[in-house]
Image (cartoon, rainbow, N blue to C red; front, side, top):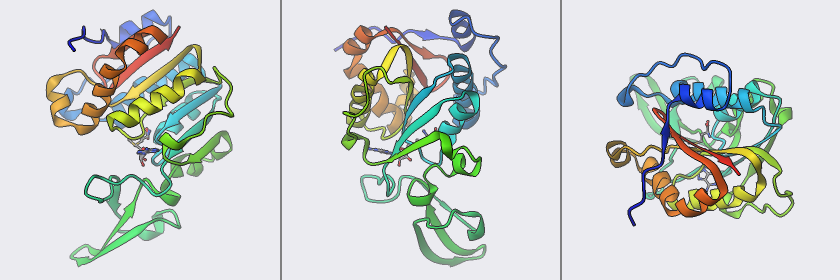
Length: 251
Ligand SMILES: C[S@@+](CC[C@H](N)C(=O)[O-])C[C@H]1O[C@@H](n2cnc3c(N)ncnc32)[C@H](O)[C@@H]1O
């Protein structure tokens, strides 16, 4: 089904629309050089600072970088979910892992794999979205007392204990497969208060970017599938251009 494109808004225009303070200067590096942990982070930090959530929900903790953006920009308590043993790709390999040369700098209790030796030393890899890696950044920054870490597949998360409208903001950045994004969005929707905002990461409507990234493909397809219900629930649904962030402000 052909739908009209999701409206786009620049970061500057969004700040003006929200009556927020002047936005910080962005790098505008272009898509090839876009760095989420720099360029999207500037926007996220700004939105949390402006919105000042008291209760924030984040799907997909990984090492806690995104949770720290919210924790440092506001006084929020953050609820965040992650698969306890990490995400696997279709072929069973780890979705998130890195080679670790100096074991002493890694959190104890990590899931590791060894692949022999090369000129740099042992080829030891750590699964960076599992076990003690999950949320390690907010713990290292002594912010763990403001975090409720939930360990499960988000599709199995039982939300019955949460009242409607419990959260002031939601960041959807867990599994990027279309059905996971749809499930996460539908679970979070009743838990988001009117006037609260929902953010989806890895959304970008450019065909070239979609073609080059399975994550963007999954998220963009999920948003297209849910378009009618999102339009119904959100007063504003806008892609922040340029970025990988889609913002919805709930009616
Ligand atoms: C892109 S990373 C999250 C990055 C994080 N939001 C940040 O800003 O730093 C995605 C995370 O979602 C987790 N994940 C993937 N599928 C999931 C699922 N079905 N349920 C819960 N967590 C999931 C992965 O293990 C990974 O840690």
